[in-house]
Length: 114
Image (cartoon, rainbow, N blue to C red; front, side, top):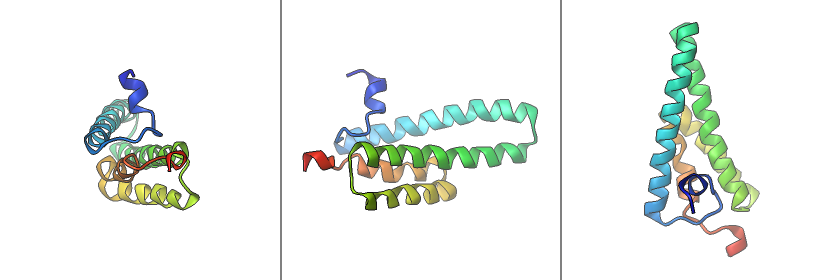
């Protein structure tokens, strides 16, 4: 399995070390994407707008990754609370906190496997 497909396969049940690798990979992806977007927006607008956009994109990225994990693992709808938790953690801690719920969910079996 190639690395890009492995990083974006949210239905795969990962071992703890694989989940940690997933976590750090996505933190790096978000930092690089944020740096590129921040540089472009920073060249055009005020720094306060850059901070606001970075915060919004962090919440969107973390919540999307968590939502895709719940959806692709076919978990019950109550697991969508993890998406809300992910958004809250992203607001407080950035991507580092926002991706924690997805990382935990990736170590669970899919509903199809249970």
